Amino acid sequence: MLIRSVRMTFQEDKIDAFLKNFGANKKKIRSFPGCHHLELWQDENQKNIFMTYSHWENEEALNKYRDSELFKSVWSYTKTLFSERPIAFSSKKIEEVEI
Image (cartoon, rainbow, N blue to C red):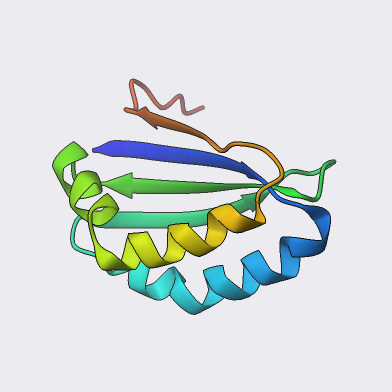
């Protein structure tokens, strides 16, 4: 399982445009082959910072999504709304601590 986090900082007047576009595409992204989980987070103190948190079957599945027309259309629009370059991380879970 590959965990992908993408931190995006938006121009403050573009937040609504981002949320509308995400809302229109979130089900398509989540149902893309190999995507097992998708969340959207917002920074508690800086309201123009968002993160996507997703689980992918493996790196190959993520790369197929990144090569898809869906990703290209969503990302080409989303990146016009940024105020800073996005930061992306691919990770794997090592351990979950339970009480």
